Amino acid sequence: MEPSQVQRAVAAAISTAGELGLQVNDAVVIHNSDRIAVRLTPCDVLARIAPQAWKDDFQFEAEAAHRLAATDSPVGELAPCAGPRVYVRDAFVLTLWTYYAPVGDIAPADYADALMRIHAGLRQIDLAAPHITVRIAGWAAEVDDRAQTPELPIPERELLSNTFKRVRNAMNQWDTGEQLLHGEPHPGNLLSTSRGPLFIDLQTCQRGPIEYDIAFVPTEVAVHYPGVNQPLVHQFRILMWAGFTTMRWRQSDQFPDRDHWRIEGFNRLRAALDRA
Picture 1 (cartoon, helix red, strand yellow):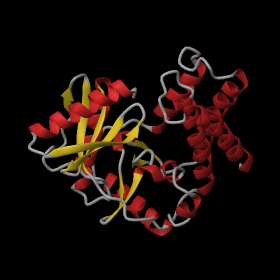
Picture 2 (cartoon, one colour):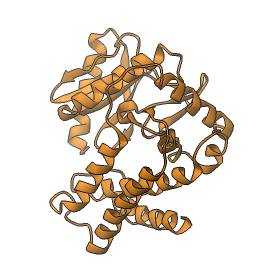
Picture 3 (cartoon, one colour):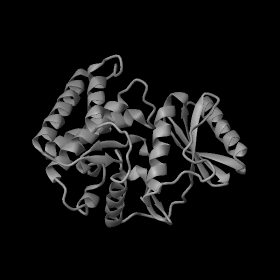
Picture 4 (cartoon, helix red, strand yellow):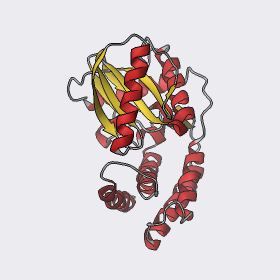
């Protein structure tokens, strides 16, 4: 968000927290992209704030977190005073979460255990979520639409388009089980807390094989997850970098250090293709 938007978004969070009886003396932005995360103190609540167009995504995420908490899954929980509700103020939507202070590194085996536990919890809830093929089709459509990705060079556009076709073909070669997934369980979405590892950012929940989720975790973590189709995991790693890179070339993308990641995304995609 632009600085003027950030200032208004923080003010919206402070006002909303105050109406819920939370004491807020300070607000610190700890993440800023197309949405922001703000730590409110001394109440120690994390506010996630975005433009109002994000309302459905925020409601989906809040409902997913609420249901998973009932299964004892390792997920960051909503602030008890707020519940699974999306608040609207000054053209922004926001949700309020428990803030967890970081406590150190997460061992690969503990990371894998947390992923297995959240997968078990996701199997226990009924949540309408799209299939991963919907997301793949969306990325492919962005690559084909020059209006959405006007600065994407032609050779790289062809590379991404061919990669999405490759992964879809690979998926058709394996008969794997499917379930509700986290969608992006990468290290940036796993908190190290005094309660153990906790996953956040549940708005990306999708349906598909567990190998899709495993592709987002480091290789030293993936080896601790038993019974997976490793060749399919690698195809999904290729897909992960193709999707990540596509998003960086969106005209509307606000990812931090976007220009660097536009190039680095292609470097990592090519490296993954070479390994295949």
